Image (cartoon, rainbow, N blue to C red):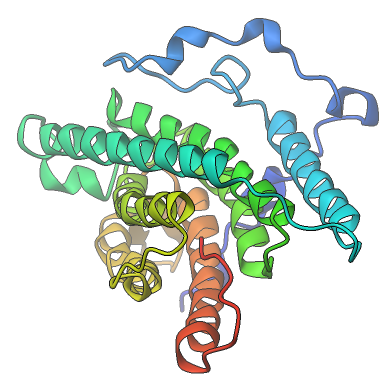
Length: 304
């Protein structure tokens, strides 16, 4: 008899909380150890917490706290009926263009290195799903994971723009931007190759999404016919994340004759943390889609 509770990495989930810090050390980030050269693509890229820029756990939690405090402070300040939303047309257009190009660079980069991994390495296509504990994958493919992680800090500006313009702000948006930084960070310490699939899918959607936002910010009167397909694409993306998890599960999980579960691949804890959040995202996006495109409310808040 197999105890399925073995599949839930409770200890790993507890380790994500920054409990190793005291009240004093939590607010102190040692920037002196950051190696800024890691921002440049390299075949020798290796993530190291505290050395790779922005990687300190307390820095991530501090940034999330600052993000939420800033957003809700601005929202409270802008709630006055005497204040009108800011006209950020030029800034918003530039911001979204940067993210569109940044997403395109990540799509092309991870596609090229995933191709090299599949066809010019010992791992083959299996490397998309499983980095073996016995012979972990390393190299530049994880640089794109890291660049994706860095982009999540920059995406905080999305929310600042929304609240300054006095646009509707939904829970999906806030939760997504708050938690996704931590999600992607969990992929990095061990080099979770399965993350490349999610990275590719999300950045591909973001190329079109941020292009749409760039066009509409630059010219608010423009109408792009494929706008509704953006949310459909995100729903498809999260659905496929569960379908494509099957090869990972088949390669990773080993059950011995005593019903004890072990793992062949790197990153079981990060995988489960991502899947739990993807399920929550899927539910939130489905709710958003129903309210936005089926019930047709008067205002349509910004998607992720």
